[in-house]
Amino acid sequence: MVKGPLNGVKVIEYCSFVAGPNCTKYFSDVGAEVIKIETPEGDEARRRGPFLGDDPNPELSGLFLYNNTNKLGVTLNLESPSGRDIFKKLIADADILVEDQAPGAMQRMGLDYEALKQVNPGLIMASITPFGQDGPYRDYKAYYLNTFHASGAGYLLPAGSPNADREPVKGGGYLGEYDIGACAAFGILGAYYWRRYAGGTGQHIDISKQEAEMTIERQNLIRYYEYGKSVTRVKANLVRDTHDTMLRCRDGGYIKVVLNPGKMWDGVCKALGNPDWTKQEIFSDSNLRVENFDQLNASLCEEALKYDTEDLFLRIQAEGTACAPVCSAEQVFRSPQLKARDFFVEIDHPRAGKHLYPGLPYKVKNAPPQGNAGAPLLGQHNEEVYGGRLGYSEQELARLKETGVI
Image (cartoon, rainbow, N blue to C red; front, side, top):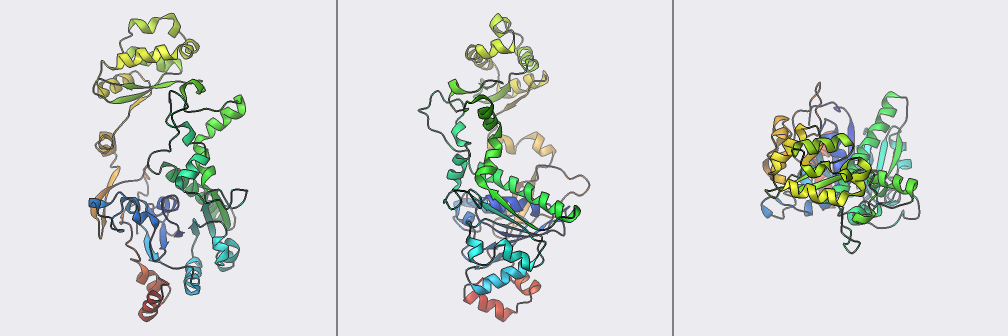
């Protein structure tokens, strides 16, 4: 287990796919003990790629390997009475439970918060569902694509479409699921702090995937409330109170450049050598630049073709204007900035071997986490957890396996 600032915190995870496992990864990677409970068939993510070496082995899913580092892994069938009894024993000394079952599923098994707080009054239970525990959508079935678009996020993509005939798309990969995992982790940490340091109690946290993803687009909701106008992916309907643009460079790369406020625009002009067209009256203040944005953008795009991506990026940054290259995976991996900060860490896995993983997006200077471990094999820690901690004998474990409980 990782040595880090959350050593001593005990978390039970009963989740699958991305959002829930990513939430508990925030805990396990900084020292909390996370026991990941999978059904005997395994987490759904084990069946999703990309797979190491294109081998569709459930132990080699890159998605699963990333989201489940530094966890203990056990299997358990909560549909069986024996499985539910074991689950309650695990809950008895846990600080946190994170689950992502459909609303009512835990109650049907007698494992809802009201039942579990009888076992552990201080338990913080977080339930992650598509639309929350109440409301008219409570029992609607939903996959990642549904919740992403229900939040309004997909309606804005791809940004800058020429017209509404271009259908909306979702964010790349499982972007929304990771947003949800981060929101859930923050809420849980707040509840844990309140219980431990502010005289609070255990509680049930109701996390709606739709609402968590909506927080990422909250600025556009406010714009509708204030102006009565929905921001869309269509250029003509964008609410233009600020401006940035994408510039294609000579070598085929792209740079995203911020153009407002005025000091950003001034920096761009200086970086380009103050060409004559930038001095035209129609570009002389921010309001005029907004009114004549299409002409301004066309001139910028023409200017950018004189430079390679790295050169233009460094020129603009040197003038104090916010800009960034649009990096490929290779460029990110080879970034000198990430190398200088030791962002990628090597983690060993019993089946996948040693590989570099994205590390923590922050540095804990006084108590840096140490000792990463790979994601667990399916049921890897059954004997350690059920035998060593709960006291089940080898014969009992064998019987539990034969009857499909573990």
